[in-house]
Length: 639
Image 1: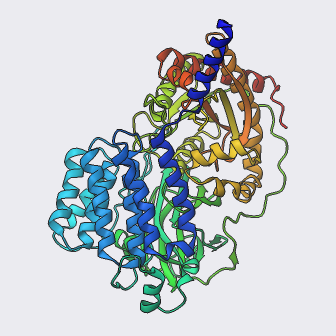
Image 2 (image 1 turned 180 degrees about the vertical axis):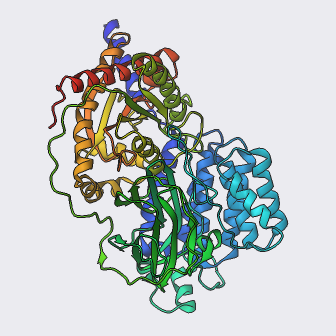
């Protein structure tokens, strides 16, 4: 009887522990889900009272749980929501509410990775409120307290423009990077898109619980629901370049239809270079975009001069048509695709350009002629598939280029465990151990980490770095891309390791994980099949995906074998497919390894231990060695 009583008590205790949850994280996740749904519902965003209720839920988190890991993030989200509300209402009160949240974040959590973002937002609001002195203090605080922060360069730019009003300044032309560590080149001073969104409407007085829709009716033509048909906003233009490869990224606040990119040959008669161009329909350039780029030849110019591209330029070709033109030095081929934007951007159009690097000659001074609009196509178009290529031959035994991508970093901590273990720190530690192990097992290989310290890299930048490196060694080396991450699940009992390759899936758990890593909602991921299918339609990409499947199998098997030899309760979740966008557009076999569940108490403890980090690295390295042996002997079987 005593034993039975103990068993019952033990079962009850386990049930209580299993059902226990973090109230702060639950509150943040609930507010986050409500926010995503709210912003898509035009019938709700019309009313100011709804904005007040939603922001209050985020603002309540740091008050109720000041030590919570999401307290700083909640204040940032609340401030951003007030700014979005202000853009609709035109109310200074809403801007001041946003300002209060940003200043509370930077004041209460000065060591947060989001403090510099909050100060930058605050400085911009002060400028809008014509308070240059306070704006200067906010920007100066970023530089003095966070000199290495993501926003420091942009803060310096704003300071250089004070006390005069901001003026457009040309961006300096920069060259590409070196072969092994390509220099990242940003079109803007910050890796984040500007906070500037649609052109502000005329200001109108706002009364508490007023229907914003009624205010819009008084100040602008058209029904209140016109927000659903507002033009997309082009917010940013970036590029990354090295060797014989350049990636250009256009960032918008939402999806926009665009014409298929077309190639125009050079015209010596009017001194124009070869160029690629396309039109973004129902799209406008934001005021912030116009202020950050030099205006030349009736367009806004981003100098590149990397031997492949002379420059990228964009102009408001028609009132609601933006034309993007890429002036070229050299072109072998180009590919393009579009995806919902992770991180901060709403939508991204990505153009990958391959060519033979040449010394950049002087740019022509003659004005560029206007181009005629091309035919309209739906978002995310791709060129017609090339004729089927012959089956790839077994890889020859030769030197490798192994690219290790430690997930997250900088202001993006990734998933966090209950003991405050951060995913970004675990992935970097495992990557550094893996680098050492690979140098031992692959002495002739070139080993590169996408990041070697705690810095932020966007998803498109990670793949761009990998492609740039691979393009320089395409004729002499085989390249492999491995992205490292930690898994997380609301159910803290789930544990195990799994390895992914790029492909579509209907598996809900895989889609949920992909949404988490892609920084988008599950709803977006459920609709992502069309985007991924169009990317996979390219034959060159498909062959790389085919090689990624046996690569994922080899890594998963070796990883589980290494862990089971030293640890108990190692759950093999297998090699799987999912639409992870960090793998999208990669020109080499690529996999994403979920090292363990940081949300599981036992695995969180292990992930923080150097011995476990080394075991993970050894397992992945052994999998690569197994893949190399199979490929060299022709045993890699393509599906």
